[in-house]
Length: 367
Image (cartoon, rainbow, N blue to C red; front, side, top):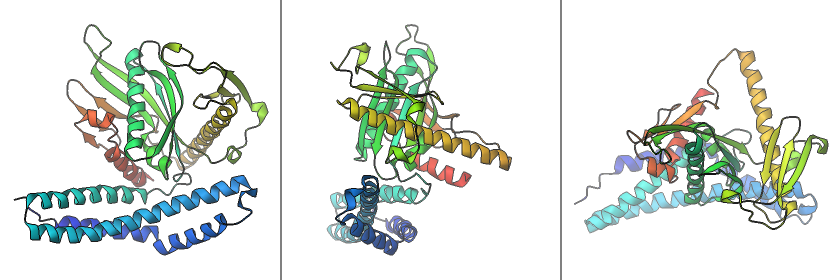
């Protein structure tokens, strides 16, 4: 028989959930939803599109948070009933059902607990992730594509909306760069700890000598602003070019010049978008990406000044932060938190929650 001595585990998750409910402040959340619902029901709501989008987005996020709390509370109550039934049935199938539900609740409450640590100004916004291949030739381009798939799979597993805004394929294999949008509450706050330099060590499939190869890729994470107007970009500061979208090997996948590339002349930042069929839609999406990246640059400059004034010198987020080792042994290790696993395949298939949770807690302690 499978042992069902889980009272300590159930007590632990009930305690964690109580802390979460206290931090969230459910009565205040309910009052916020009521206020936003009243504003969303106003007949003149969409007279101001920007304000309407803020109201509806905030309402959706607040309702999602409330629903999640209510669902977890219900599942905790049902777990007690399930445990009593399993003890009465006294069979392995019932015991496995209890252990499975308990494991899922532990994971879910752990994620919610981490989210309570996200209190940054832009943490609640969707995220833009840009992956660029670095040193390492073809292996680096292949590694960049592996990271792209990893983040897409992570988003899909969490049922988040994800789309590739732009992708530039390398000549032999992999990608030079790609930008994806993950639209979910707190996507930026959660994924911002993924920013930095990632390193891959493996026996290269592109090296006929079968030697071990080290390659690098950079990951940039910025919040996706609701409106371009959130940061001022004069028309005189940008150059807009249009071109045809392309696929692997450089072949054209569109017959019209619908893809858009925008260069921000003062900073040299270049963004492009080819996901939409319309040039107007691609231009709007590219401007949102540019605004988000300019915001990140602005925040980094402000943070740098604060650190200089404080006289504190710490490692930057641009430093190497994670190693993926496939040979001579199997390991993925975060060099900031020391969190590691021995299953790189699962990580590349989107199993990132442990790294993300450790990263958020590490960042909170460092601030």
